[in-house]
Structure formats: structure tokens, C-alpha cells
Length: 109
Image (cartoon, rainbow, N blue to C red; front, side, top):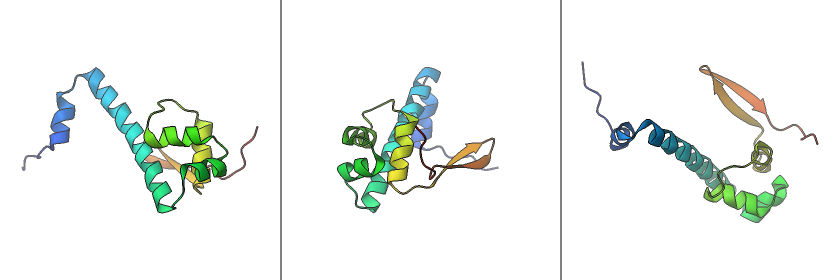
């Protein structure tokens, strides 16, 4: 049996207290969202202002999500931005099964 080699990151996370580990993963998720938004904007060569206009939100919201400075934002804003980027579905994993959420339908007020 071969021993699994742990990465420096794995060792670091294992050394954290449960509270610090939870904080680490929350910040990591925020970083992933920010990186996803940055990559999509770069790929489509779209500016903060243009995305905000397409999404129907303020440039401040897009910039805050992009930079990771805003920690709490509405799902409505999040889905508007995804739609602005041309996303039609959002996948959620539940009990090992991927469930697509259709976000292309018009938003009801």
C-alpha cells in the first residue's frame, strides 16, 4: 500500500482549528467565485460597466463580486450577472448528483 503524499496546502488545512478551517473554506469559496467571474469577463473581453449594463445591476455590485470585497450579496444579483455573461444553467450537486438550474427564463418581479 502506498502512502498518500500530502500537499503543503493539505497539511496547512489539517493544522487549522475547526473554526479556522471553516473560515478558510468560506474565504476559498469567495475566491473561487471571484476567479470565475474574472475568467469569464476576460474570455469575453467584457468590462465591469458593460457587464453591469447587460446584467441590470450597478457597476459597484459587479466590481465588488469581481474583487471579492463584498462578502454578502443577493442571489438575484448573482443570477443576473450569470445571465449577463450568457450563462443559461447553473449546476448544483446534491448527494453526488448534478442538478441543473435553468437561469435563462425571465426574472419575475
